[in-house]
Length: 294
Image (cartoon, rainbow, N blue to C red; front, top):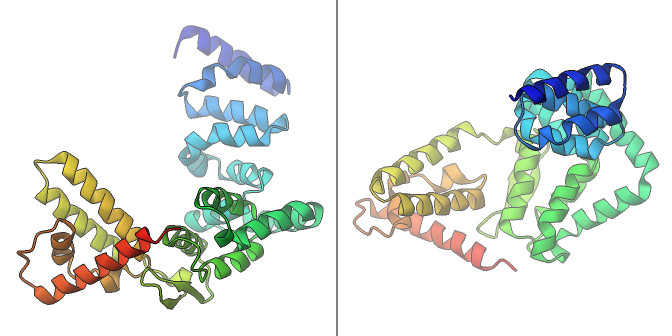
């Protein structure tokens, strides 16, 4: 770090103690445009937060999320709630394996939001619930806005969307993954990549077993294209999109990783014809689901 920057940071630390947040922000703004030590970012973000600039504070903190999660969890939850990011706040608790006092804080913040911002809540929920009525370019924006919904409203909308054939498979599975991350423990019905209704309990969706399959296929692709990094990258991307579309049915569909790769790379010399035909059928199903995006 440059000597001049050290001087500015020391001045900012003193100004922060004196609660002169405007001056702290003025001094650190230019420095923090580039990568800085996390503690410098923390000082800057705390000043922004205390100065009533919660949105900007969160945006500045986001690149350092891992540091906040390990070193300043309580403040990170405050930042999320100040930005009405109820769903990410709940996922954070699940990921960290902690509840109180944070869960109570989230519940109270959701209740206050429901009471104080009725119109905003109704608008966000209506857009989320009727996601399938929106053009493709708008759907992703609405998904992000849904992070600001209280849990009960998010789940209500999610259950409807998971059965909405006018919502593309990638969006539906994004929502299903969110419910899994929330460890939602009630049964839900979703339209799978095959266009049929399936039931699952998001909290019970296992990630380790299907991650093992993904790792195995990844390795087979990497080995096959070890001398061709461009094709290797392209086929890995294709496969990861396939897996996302298959979620959470990966294990029951990809029962033979070698056959799956053989079909993916158009290698017709695969020995196990039953597995080969199964892989062909499912990859055609995935392709059809992607072509049918409206």
